[in-house]
Image (cartoon, rainbow over all chains, first blue to last red; front, top):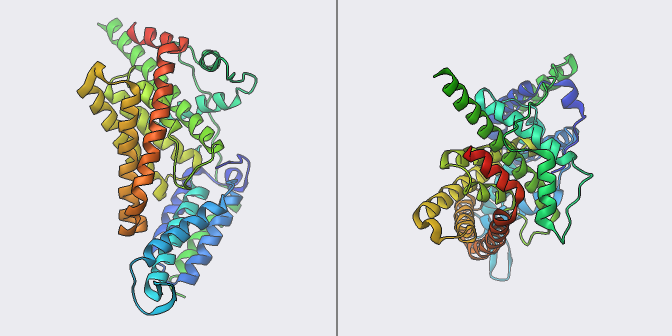
Length: 201
Length: 183
């Protein structure tokens, strides 16, 4: 999953506020029992994920929903809609399979737009994650040194030695945290209200 | 006494920092994994486990488990999957694999190589993921995918373990890591 760092959410929302927004949306999404509404919600979440800089592999999600639906169809339920040879497609199994698949994919999209690497977890573990991301960025930025197939382990060693000398810990720089702007707060409020309102329409 | 405490603190700090670096290499390998074609959309080669497998020979079990936790949380935050089923799968598979690898190392000691440990870990990880997918996503019918899924897991576990074994034997950098940990 490729991520663009500069986007509407990183500019306008504090990572914790965005995370809380998704936590508040989640029950409204899960309580929704109208398939059409849920599909619409999923499409909005997918769009929000692209706004958040995530490049979505659509084929992965299509295969995901299709395979969940297929495995559900193997346990017939309700009226027979049509048959493909000996295989009967039943209404109950089809709708519950699609609902399940769409729900799971929607949960991934909610996660994709609302979870960011700059979301800081509390305590010592949070501090370790800051270090982890600091080193990860350093590894990713090491473009000058390349791996050589003929001396693979030697060239990996060269890169590792240039990045980290054991016994010499490095201090990650203090990261700036973005405050939630009025625009960001408005978008989050609209998301929460619209998802909850859909339960009562 | 104070100097001893400070020395212990310094060692703990260095060790945790090294674990964070190992965690970062896990994330790096998981991004590399996207470059390889996959036979199944949900199948993973397990390259991100390479640093975890190597860590078995360098750190105590609690540091290995900490590394696994950092790897899973880091992947969840980087990929944005922390609040989804993907995170649950990753958490279940990674910890099952870590526990089985630690247990097989403890049980067989020097009689087992990293290849064997890695294969056991891959089987544990894939079994848990199949169980979770049957239980929460696909339903009972999905057991049919278990044999090829586990077979592919064994093959990739073998390959990753083989590389980990070779890297452990030949890497200069790991030699320095060992020295610093023994100091």
